[in-house]
Image (cartoon, rainbow, N blue to C red; front, side):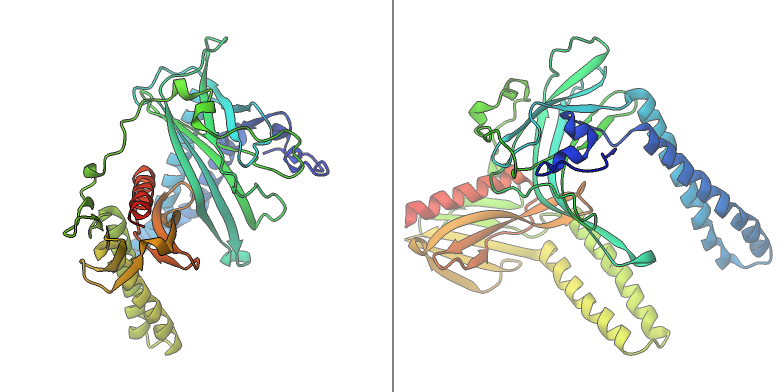
Length: 414
């Protein structure tokens, strides 16, 4: 993104040229395509001599040398990625998010339209996803690592595009309510940033459309009052695809039904997230191989101890995701919470009158900010002590429904 030399005092969003002009450009611009080609070609040139050396070693019968093929193979993957970026750029060009107001204010609404090259109306609509993430970088030199933690996310599907004056352009409606307590975008420290990113994609014949925009969310120094965030005040609601109301019986991993004492029982069963479980156990297997390797190579005792201790934590985490269960029974003015494995675990008993709230947070995620967040339900008592009432819920709508239903039942039983 192009940036001006200095930022306006008290108006940090003006430090970026596109934001200052009330828009945000997609990350798929031409220079990124050129950069992808440079990286791919340089990698291929550097790894090409390895092929010659590998041939000689393989002819000598050194089959273990075949592991060196991973370097040229990585170059081919980079080349394929560069070709795909080029085809996407040629097909869709640079998309632009035109904002109605700049910046977007916490407690207000992100309103605008994505202007893209004309595309046929996708059967599945235009899928939009707004994510707030913390981007952190630690270490130095070759040991620098980057992590992006998802702090908040909302998704919508727009069924049709906005009317456009240009027949060669598609305008995708964008509208998201921003929580009043939302963290603002930060620009000062590149190693610790708060990002707000809008992703848009649509299933189009051939290559699917996809674009990503970083948007400015700031509250300090903004003169206009926040826009009301009520759904009734959403001017883009008529373009949204109609979704069926969430019904808990759709998810076999979560059961909501009557309890034996005439109340209600919420039960989060084991084996609810098979893909996450498979990924965790695959990583655990690799980590176990590393521990065995350290032991076989007679590494200093400290290394097997540290790696082995971390492996115990990984085992517990993998078992919790796979076999962990939560049962919450609300009846006769009490709430009984059981957290354990396969339905077995200690029971906590609360008076419903002592429980004041249930909150929804992101407890785990897979991958970076483009990954999947898993939600946690947390009970709060009158002393602000928190208790986990359900973890690893993948569907946000389901988690929101569960939180609202548990809160309603507790209030009724108090």
